Image (cartoon, rainbow, N blue to C red):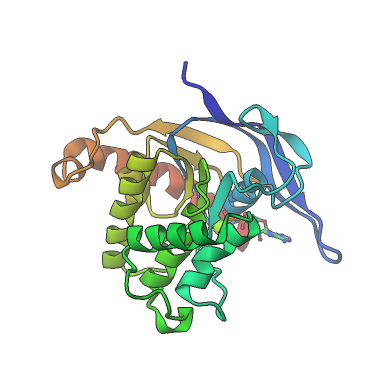
Length: 264
Ligand SMILES: Nc1ncnc2c1ncn2[C@@H]1O[C@H](COP(=O)(O)OP(=O)(O)O)[C@@H](O)[C@H]1O
Ligand SMILES: [Mg+2]
C-alpha cells in the first residue's frame, strides 16, 4: 500500500457565528491521500469544500475528527502545506518579485539565495520580464501565476488549491492546467484540488472525491485510471467522457438536493 500523506478521519465542522444560526458545513469526512497523489474534490456550491481545505491547511481549528499529515496531527498552518486560493490573494502594494519573495523572507532564507529562487519560480510560471510589475498591471491569469509561484517557491510537499482557476477564461485555464501538471509531475507534490468543473477534475486527477450537499460528506470516490500525460487523444476518448458523465451525474444529484433545500 502507498504511504498515506494526508489522513482525514471522521472530520466534521460547524460554523458558529457570533449572531445568527450555526451552519453545519462538514459531517464525518473520511479520506486518505497518498504521497504524490493528485486528488480533486468536487461538489455543489456550499457543500464545505473550502472548509475542508482550510482545515487541512490548519487555517481553521479542528473541532471533530482527526487530520494528520505525515502522521502528525495538523494544528496550525505550515510552510509544508502551500495554499492557492481562487482570488489570487496577492499583496497589491508589492511587485511580482516582492510577492514571490514574501514566503522566503518569512522563512529567513539567505537573502542572495532568495532572489535567485524567486527568479527561478517566476521563470517557471512564465512571468519572466514582469518581475517589477504590480498585480494591478497584470491579467487574471498572470496574477494566478504569481500566486502559484509564491506558493511553490517555498517548496511545500503539499499543495492545497481552492478553485485556483475558477476566475480565469477557458484558454488561460487550459494553459495553467497544463503548467500545473508539468510542475506536479516534475517536482512531485501531493495535491488537494477543489473545482466545480468536472472536466478539470478528470483532466488533472488520480482520484476524484465527490461530496454531498451540505453538510458535506463523501458521496463517492472515483479512480481516474487514464494514462498520463493526458494528451488530446486521451481527453477526447470514450473513457474520459465516461468519467466526466459519471461524476457530473453524481454532482447534479447533489446540486438538485442543495437547491431543493434552499428553496424549501
Ligand atoms: N465563516 C463562516 N460562518 C458561517 N458560515 C460559513 C462560514 N464560512 C462558510 N460558511 C458556510 O458553510 C458552508 C460551507 O462553505 P464552504 O466551505 O465555503 O463551501 P464550498 O467551498 O463548497 O462552496 C456554506 O453553507 C457557507 O455558507
Ligand atoms: Mg469554496
